[in-house]
Amino acid sequence: MGSCMSTEAAAGGKGGKQSKDGGTGRLSSQYAQMYKEAFGRTSQAKLEDFDFFFPDMGPLTTESYRKRLDTSLGVQELRLPKSGVQIRYAWVTQRGYYPDALQKANQDALIVKKDVAGDPDTCFFGVFDGHGTAGTQCAAFARDKLFNNMMGDMDFLDDPETAMLHATEKTNEQLHKAVTDDTLSGTTAVTMLIRGRQVTVANVGDSRAVAAELHGTELVAVDLTSDQTPYRKDECERVKASGARVLTLEQLDGLRDQSIQEWGVEEEDDGDPPRLWAQTGNYPGTAFTRSVGDSVAEEIGVIGTPEVNSLEIKEDTAFFVIASDGVWEFLTSQAVVDLVDKHQDPQSAAIAVCVEAYKSWLSSEARTDDITAIVIEVTLGKGLSAHPNGSAPGLSKSPSKASGLGSGSVHGGTGAEPSGNSLKRSLTKSKSIRKGLARGSMALLDDVTAAHAEASTTLSRAFLQPCEKTAEEDEYLRKILRDHTLFHLPDGKLADVLSYFRQREVTEGEVLIEKGQTGKFFFVVQSGTFALKIPAIKSQTPGEPDHPEQTLRRYAPHAGLESTFGSHALVSGAKPYGGAIVARSDGVVWCLEKRAYKAAVMGTSPTAAPTADDHPQMPTATDHSRMLAPDTVA
Image 1 (cartoon, rainbow, N blue to C red):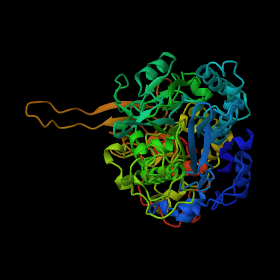
Image 2: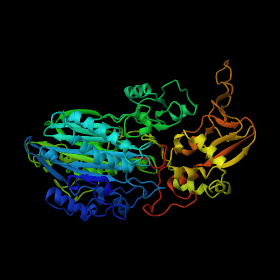
Image 3: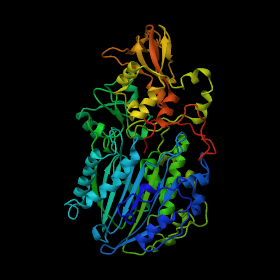
Image 4: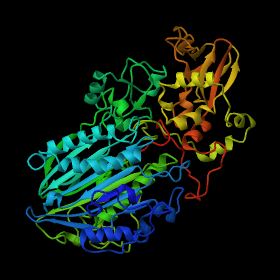
């Protein structure tokens, strides 16, 4: 948590160290010292003062929730003397909740810099959302390098847009050469440079920057960035031209026609988004088209070149919000602007955004992403108390929307937590499941209670124990799985996963995965032939013939045929198969139980009960995680 933060006081270093309990109940003395150096003062702000904000739903107690959250030491103020711009800002970063990895590190990082290049009229903000097994390191690397690369660019003083573009591209190149393994890991990067009234924004990935502008009497969200995914036609065509196959999981599995682009818009995502695959293998499976890192995906068109644009701070500019996808996954830009507008200072607003995002995650899933937000309030040539209720335009712009906090309050105050129900539902994304694979590789989080209940059966236990294999058997599995995205793992974790595969003999006609199910096992074919069959359908229209049984795909250890099936078992929330997978001959398959896979990747026991640390209350929402590897988020 502390290691995720970098400010001007940290002198470009790694920031403070994380406390032993995984967070801070009170802002640490180390942060206080950093802010004393940065701003010439200290504050005794306590997270306990914001307890009335914190959610009363979900698996975490207030104390446990607080331990996962870090925030700036109060509201920070900057005055840009030459331009007359006055800024108040605050940041919040919250470690995600994963039932099977309670101590999983926060993969978000952020940076704030003032007096950039010795200019009191220039400041810099950024959010980085890491993904993949090395996501935390990738986000920290980008945070530490990108700013310095921008400062060292020859165009920085005269052409900040070009400098920020060069800086992001250079950071991407440096990460490829760094010790950090970015083959299947990387990070988003959304950065904002404010120089007087001029604002420049650069973006790679699906973190987002939003401006709130006053249009008449309405405060309107204006997106300053555009998510870079295959849903965008221009991005989809660009990666295809670089050799990527763009397919959903159902298309990849042969359940739908691969020649038809079936997906619509991202807001209507049904949980099976379009992903990028190599021509010769089922990897890397990314659902983004730009990233810092991800060197394997770069071979099929994923680039580290940001989209850059500029705007001017005007009288109707109220504030900016820069946030990771943990915020935007379930909340629209307008919903976030409306929520910020309810509060009179940036810190309470940023905390409220994180709390609302946390609630939205748990309304659909049994886990949450890491969540990070920076709220930046701007005013032109007037005091911060010029607005009614002592607030600047945009933050609680009308008395009826005030949260009850006093102007500029750091310690909260009286009043109740704004209800999440007060947000217009039409402004909240109606996604029932995680769009998933949003960065790199897929995470699997089953409903904890159901998973451990299933583990009681004798049959399941047989597949939850490691099984010794000969060198030839191990080599066969490695060869078959070499190009499968679910098994792009570090050598140690891959060896652990392979240890759980067990052989099983099957007979002709045996059904391995039933129609309408995702199954419990992933299969590698050793011998025999298998097929995905759609049963015959009786016509409901008089005079029309019945639809005959169809074979959509065959599986066998032969050239030109897939030799694995059952990937949906390893993807929590995946759609069930539209047909049954049946043995067309006697044969032998290697079976991997889904909990064994998850446990091997997570480094836990597949039969171990969940620990009580951090979640004395069990999650109540059904998990629909759609990511492809267990330790990727954003």
